[in-house]
Every structure is written in structure tokens, then in C-alpha cells.
Length: 96
Image (cartoon, rainbow, N blue to C red):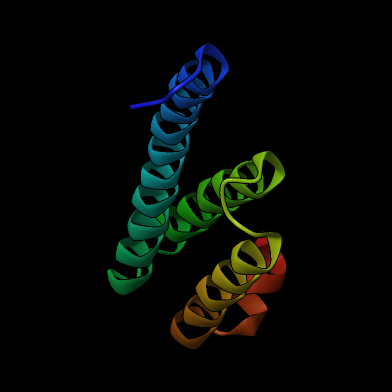
């Protein structure tokens, strides 16, 4: 239990931030999962769309400081590697 009013307020703020960050992180995981599933099903258009949405969520989370920017970059790179292994680099160039 916090000893001062300011510590109590910081506790409330930290809890709000924790819940917000948790929601953003869950959203990122969901969109990355959708992208991986679309790639696994070898559906080119769905994979392109899912990767684009996953990129958007990763960038947003990194911009807000929920995940580190290098973590976002690594996940984006791995998604594109999976895409290229499935569809070939020529298809990836057309989607970028």
C-alpha cells in the first residue's frame, strides 16, 4: 500500500498504463498471428493485406513505446522472410 497521496496517484497511473500497454501488445500479437496464418495458407492477397496490417500495428506500438523499435523491426523482418520463402522475392517487391 502506498504511503503518500502522490504514490497512490502514481500507482493508479501505472495501472492505467499497464492495461493500455497490455491491450496494444495483445493487438500486435493478434495481427502478427493473422499474418503468419495467411502466409501458411499460401494466400497471396490475404498475406499481403495481413502483413500490411501487422506492420501498421507494430509501428504504432513501437512509436508509443510499448515495444522497442528494434523488436518491431525484427518481427517485421521475420514476417517478410516467411513471406519471401512462401511466395518468392518477386511477389514481395510487388507488394511493397
